[in-house]
Image (cartoon, rainbow, N blue to C red; front, side, top):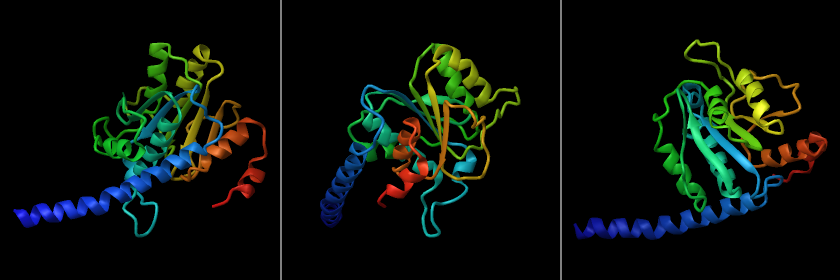
Length: 225
């Protein structure tokens, strides 16, 4: 028993400083995100549908789109003060975590896998806002854009968003396409809907540039990776 305890203590002494260093690095990344101050009202919704688990982000990686979406959402959770955060699948569920620890919150959300099911009902995120008459500035969906009504009830993200704009005419919808299957659940010709494929933290800079009328290609060229 003493040997086991010593081994565990040794591991903690190694792992904890690494986690603390990673947390500091992640927080530094958040501080540099442009276009989203602490007064911005934001909803962060992560897709937990089955397709989010299909592919890893790399040949030798066990990290799925599902994990990336949760991490990106917790980055923004830390950045903004007026935040609603959660996951959607069969249903939409909000989770009230402290904004202090990005990586810990991400791990906590990962542990909630299965609680909302594995369907694609993104429209329920917007319907929740409509039902509660809650005005949000920016609605962000971290998804692979494979979204439809699993109940075959004729509902859709596009229809719900159109209804929501009657309550919040200035709201904007952001689709973070983490897989890039080539599908779009809503008309991208609208001036209140933004879609960008990829999962770098730099996507937030691109969206901020688009909102301010800056040429996205010029912005991308200036990004230092």
